[in-house]
Image 1: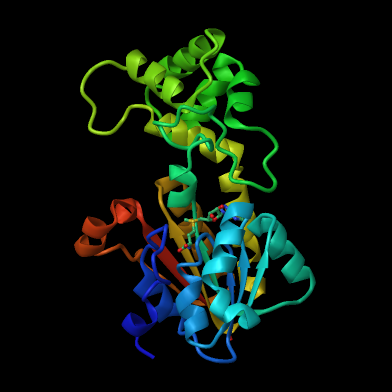
Image 2: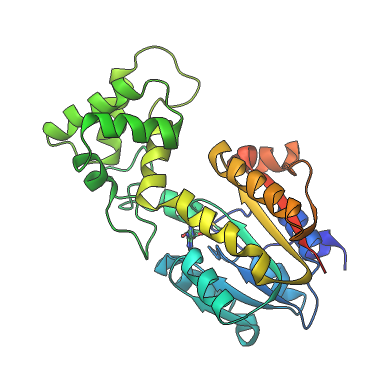
Length: 299
Ligand SMILES: C[S@@+](CC[C@H](N)C(=O)[O-])C[C@H]1O[C@@H](n2cnc3c(N)ncnc32)[C@H](O)[C@@H]1O
């Protein structure tokens, strides 16, 4: 079946899925095949797999995403199973149970629904407290991360997870704002902007927000554990597809795939990442930083 025919997302998607045609072409869904979607979200990548007659096990740590996907993919409910928890927990349990899939997909990061929903504290404009928990498995919200870290630890966190060059200024601004009782995402973003004057191409709080979100959701730990389990989750010839949205994630995927190739676990891996076309980026600005890497299991 042609990728373009498979790539049409479910109608009226609240989240524009990235690199849909490329994912479908790599996974080549067909009746009898079984896929693990580690990041179900609104079901935008799973919809074409199900439409092609395949079975999907969809994981999402966000109960709201699970409810939405269940509603949107209702027509295929007999071939769709949805589970909560984190994908690293799911992967470990599936490996222990000896389950194998024809393809595994992870479309990393947060969804547009999570970013746009007031009260979740992901957006720079949210007047609610800086929460940033995606759902299951999160121990602390972002305010607790800031309050529970001294300034030096916060500097380290901003450098490591946000590659923030102004980490000292940003950490001090966050601590001072918290001491003044500022708790909202918008208020803390404004405090960061005030601490880094001048003209900026992007909002100066974006890197700090990325860093805090990664820490709250242990995103890199989750990804590392998933990458370690991937070869064991795939049947011979099966394909792993990972879409990363920043260099920290992409670096982990690239390294893991190369090491696993050297150990003979993959038959072939992407030499360079697939990127969205200018047309896709024009239609969906969130796609601009996406990098898709794939690896195919050795027989
Ligand atoms: C970018 S969205 C996926 C969108 C989906 N591919 C689509 O096209 O509709 C990422 C989703 O993965 C979920 N997620 C992120 N990290 C996760 C993890 N470690 N375990 C389980 N779900 C996770 C988020 O809650 C979010 O709903």
